[in-house]
Image (cartoon, rainbow, N blue to C red; front, side, top):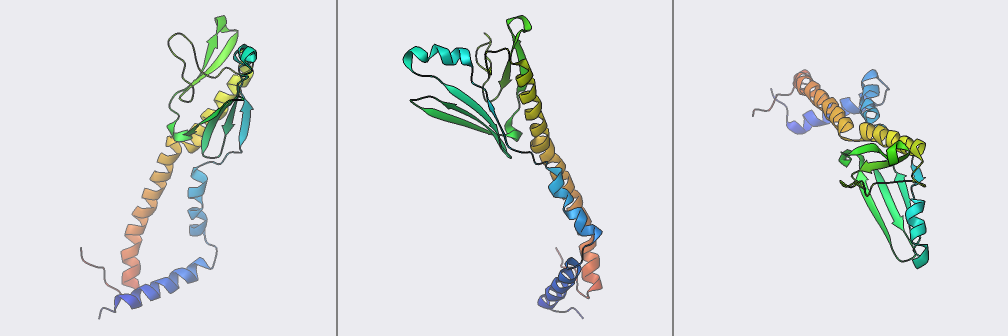
Length: 187
């Protein structure tokens, strides 16, 4: 005899609640999904190009730039005494990210989606006087880590994990319903 659906769900609910009260290896694997997307500490870099900033001294428009690496996105803030602007990009949307050299390899700049470099070599993020190649390497390395840990690659790992879990549940759920004395609903 097939029991009413309400009874089946109540019995299933009690069974799930009873199992969830005790730590088990299955529950430990559930938290593995949280570990698929790495978390990073927030960091901020002063990426003001002092040569450009000093050009604005005559007009009293010293422009400062900061690059904030937040948990989910990167923010490029540009500020001077007249205005301020912010560009936000999730790490999954950072497709272009590279270190470029200027002035025969003595200077370095960051070419990214936030501040692209044109064909003439203008644009990009040039911290300090342009000779801060160590800082540029550090920023590019940190952005690449975050792009891999929080970007499209991490999202694909998370989707694959979820698909595996759903596939297991699709196999286990009919067995559990049969064990509880219920019937599998027809399609």
